[in-house]
Image (cartoon, rainbow, N blue to C red; front, side, top):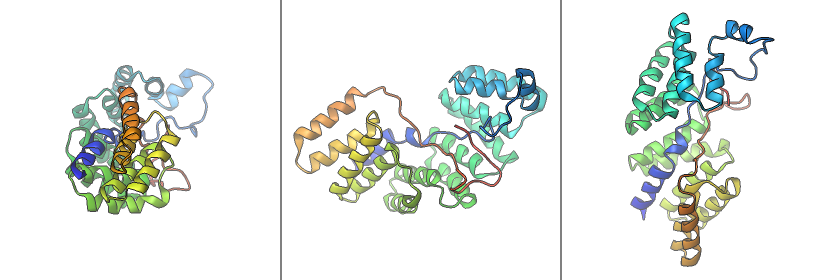
Length: 265
């Protein structure tokens, strides 16, 4: 059972940990300019961020690259381009940009993004190193902790994964991803009732989140409810191809905000 569920997490939740944070990129606190010319003058990556917000990632890369021909390479510009590459499933290109960001802006956010790029490349151990350095700068941030959970499970290090999950619990996001993670860990710990409750809570938060149904199916099958398990697995299969939402790294004022970074949705 353990090996199978670890595979569920690796396949189902890896995507859940790889949402990148944009540092200081067009946040709502940015002053509103009267014209596009003023916006461009005050912040050269406004056009690139507009493309990012519209999910036009290739255009965002072109725009920010052109802008950096004038500004030089900056943490903001490289972050935008690195995240855009990640969204286009270009992990090597994302890594090249995001590792450069850490040399300019060594912060929890830049290290978090670097860890995500390393995870995309399959380097779980190196990702853990980046996340742990991020955690040293932003202690108890739940998004970093959740990424450490899945990265340790990637290496079959269940005890360490559980330790980080316990640490994340007080500030755990109330969303499908967090509760699906909880369900996986409860199944690995043979706490099937709690795994079932966690999976159902995950589905309550997001009925389209596929991995939750796989955990639900496993829990129901373990409890002897083969019909319910089959129904859950059928839903899982029907949702194939649905976009997985990602854990967002958005430190709020009441949370543990990196001193030098802000993020935007």
